[in-house]
Length: 77
Figure 1 (cartoon, rainbow, N blue to C red):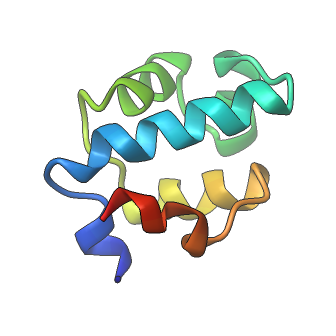
Figure 2: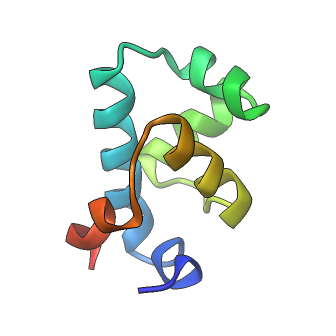
């Protein structure tokens, strides 16, 4: 699965759930994560809720900061 496919369509809600779960596990607030990737906490909220699409660069920043791998998103298929 490539990143562009992963970030579009019905998959974005599942991606958001994985991001939220991992962020909470690491005890990060949306604001703290937003500061680390240089975006707003509103964007983090929208991504976690599947309301907007992530740009590939933001997705890569998030998975780096949250110590995730692309394989962690296999359940999104």
